Amino acid sequence: MAAEEQGIRLVAQHALTGKLLVIGDVPVEQLRLYSECGLLRCPSCGGELRLKAGAVRQHHFAHVSLELCAARYAEPESEGHRLGKLALYRHFRRDAPAAQLEWHVQLTDQRVDVFVPPNFALEFQQANNTAEEWRARQRLYEQAGLCAIWFLGQVRYSETRSEPMRPISLYDPSPVPRHIFEAAAGAFRIREMERAMLEAFPLLYYLDPYSQMLTILVPRSWQAQTLRAYRYRLPLSLCQLRPNGLWTPLHNQLGEKLLRNRRK
Image (cartoon, one colour):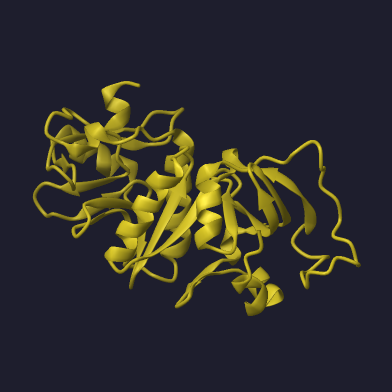
């Protein structure tokens, strides 16, 4: 992928005022003027950025030169990834105006997709990291005192053909809701990163960056690359951040006991 793709940012800093400028928060004509005057800077390296605001792709900033920016070593982001973290930023800042997009964690030298005060790190994950890579990132967030909430890209969601989706049986022993939020049961293909997440968290979240619908998997059991789970879908707009982490209307229905019990 081209170097320009690696240097893409959704946040720029005004060279004179130091103000952070987020794509979508500032009128594009104003950003275009700043760009033409050479007033856009990378918040990480201070290098000059240019506005890219065509008719086809998501508007963004790109480095004039990546030579001095650590972003040149970063994994290139897809269009879907940029849309996903923008969706998270725009939704959760409604209750937290101080939320920041592409926030730099000084202690661990990480860049969080979205930071929401006081301590939430929201990550939109589409790339296929190994389990160890994911665990390392999670440990760094914990060391920095951050509560990381991981949203997988919808492209990672995969139902198996051998066990197609079905209604949740009335005789199912688990006390889960059966008739809300498109409730269904089935089997899903997961990779090692998802398995690592299931060792740490009770649920998997998949976000469609285009429709902004959230798919939630409540595990029943998993073995190798197959996860058997209950599936629910609801709009991101119904989600909130609470002291214990992400809250959705489904959490009231699941109950604390089920959320604590992760059964393999």
